[in-house]
Image 1 (cartoon, rainbow, N blue to C red):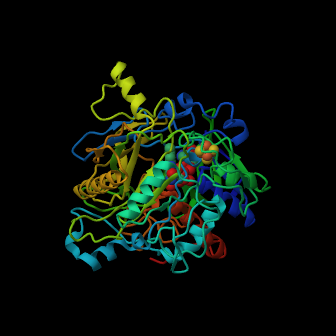
Image 2: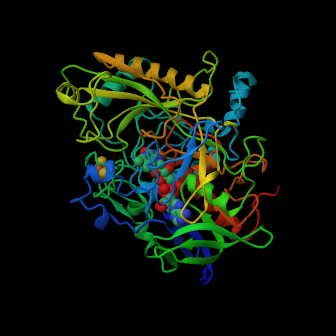
Image 3: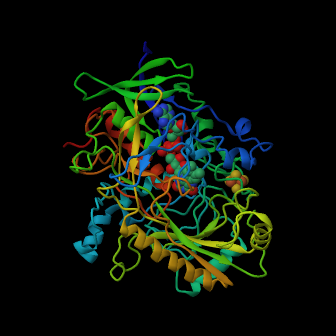
Length: 588
Ligand SMILES: Cc1cc2nc3c(=O)[nH]c(=O)nc-3n(C[C@H](O)[C@H](O)[C@H](O)COP(=O)(O)OP(=O)(O)OC[C@H]3O[C@@H](n4cnc5c(N)ncnc54)[C@H](O)[C@@H]3O)c2cc1C
Ligand code: SF4
C-alpha cells in the first residue's frame, strides 16, 4: 500500500550536482524542499576520510561509491537489428549513487561549450552548406545562446572555485588562456593548477606548431578558496586519487565541498536518502504532476505530493523516469516521431601514446583535471570543408593518476602477464604520456533510449534500452583527431608513438566516459524536444529536468560546466517567472 505524506512545495529527485544547487537556492526562495536520493548520505569527514580514501581496490576497481547494477541497469545494443542485453557490471560509464552523485567522484574538468556549439546546425549549414550534414543526423540548435548562458557559467564556476586562465574577457583575448572561448565577464576565481613536465613539453610543442595551448579549467583547486555560499576549500595536493574517489582534502569541488554545508543549515530543507523515486504522479488529465512515488530502504512505498517536481537524477535516469511516468511522447525510431529518448549521444575518445627515453614524468603527481589543452580542432574553430565531417575535439595532455593497480601502460603487443610484462611496466611507467582527443558526438535517428520490451527490474518495471553506436561522421572525426594528437606527440620529442583510433563498434565494457547526453532535450519545437528553453516539460509544466539529458547533441568537452550553467539558468526562470505565475514559460 502506498502511504501518502504531507505536501511539499518542491520534490527533487536526486541529490547530486544539479539537485543540491536547486535545493539550496529554492530553500532560500522560501520554499519547503524535499530531496529524495537513491543512495546513502555521504560527507567528506566520514566517508572520504584520509585514512581510507586512497584505496584503489575499493573505489576504483570495486566501484564502492558508484551505482550497482542490481539497483538499476540498462540493456544495450549497437543497432536496432540486435537484441539488447542487460549491462551486468557498469563499464563504459559509471553512474553515481548517493548524496553528491557522480559529482563526488568526478575528475573536475569544468568546461564552457563554445558559442558555435549552441547553434551548430545553423553554423554548419551557413558555412559549408547542407552537404556537410551527416546522414541520418538530428542535429539541432540549442534554444538559448552562449551569451544568454554566460552569467550562469560564471555563477557555477564561482560556486566551484574553478582554477583556470581566461582566454577572452569582455571580448579581449588574454595571453595564456584559450583564445577560442566565448567572451566571459571575468577571469576564473582561482589561478590555474601547476603543470608537470609532460604538459610543459606539450605546451611548447603545440605553440611551436602554431597551436594555442592553455591550462585546463579545473575543479581541483590551485589555492584556498571560499565560495559565495561560504564553503571553504583547501589547495589540491596532486594526490592522484581523484577520479572515482571522494577528495579527503576538501580540494575537489563537489556538492559535499561547495553546496551541502550551506544546504544542511536551511531549516526548510529535508533529505530522504536510500529512497528511490519510481515515478512522477500525474493529475487525472495528465497535464500536471502531483508529486512523486518512492520506495524506501525497507521496500515500503510512499507518495510525496509536491507542487513542483525537479528531475535531477542524472541524464540517463531522468529519461527513464520520464518514460515510466508517461510524461512526453516516447521516441519511436521507426517512424522518427516522439521525443522522450530521442537524440541520445555520447563522447568519442582517440589520441596517441608517446614513449620517451630518459625522462621521469612522475605520473603519480596528478589530479583529475590537471592538464594542458588546446581547442584549435574543436567545434568550428577550423575549416571542416576539406575533411567532410561535423564536430571536433578538445585535445589534452594530462595526468589524472599513476596509481598502482590500474595505471600500467605498456607498448601495444606487450604480453599481459609474466616477466616480459613486468619488464615493460618497469621501463614504461615513468616514460609514457598521452595526447588525447575528447570529441563531440552528433545526434542521429539511429541512436536513442526507450523502454526494453523484455527485461524488467525487481519492481516489474521495464529497464531502459540504449541503442547506440558511433556513426561514420564520428569515426572519421575521431581518427583525424588521433593523427593530430600523434603529430603533437612527435613534436614533443617522443622516441616512439602509438596511435589510438576510436574503438568501434561501441563497447560497454572498458571505461570511456560518463558523458551520456540527450534523451530529454531542450529545444524550440515540441515536436523535436522534450523541454522548452527553461528546461520545463512542454507537456507537464510543473516538471523541470536538469542534467546532460537536456543536450540536443554532445560537444567536444566534458559536460558538467554546461550542466551547472543550465541549472542556474533554469533556476533563474523558476525564481523570477515560474514562482510568480506558475504555468508554461513558453507558449506552444
Ligand atoms: C568517474 C567520473 C568522472 C567524471 N569526470 C567528469 C569531468 O571531469 N568533467 C565533467 O564535466 N564531468 C565529469 N563527469 C560527469 C559528472 O560527474 C556529471 O556530469 C555530473 O555529476 C552530473 O550531475 P547530475 O546532477 O546530473 O547527476 P549526479 O551528480 O550523478 O546526481 C544524480 C543523483 O540522482 C540520484 N538518483 C538517480 N536516480 C534516482 C531515483 N530514481 N531516485 C532517487 N535518486 C536518484 C543518484 O543516486 C545521484 O546521486 C564524471 C563522471 C564520472 C562517473
Ligand atoms: S588530486 Fe587534489 S582534488 Fe583530487 S582527490 Fe587529490 S587532493 Fe583532492
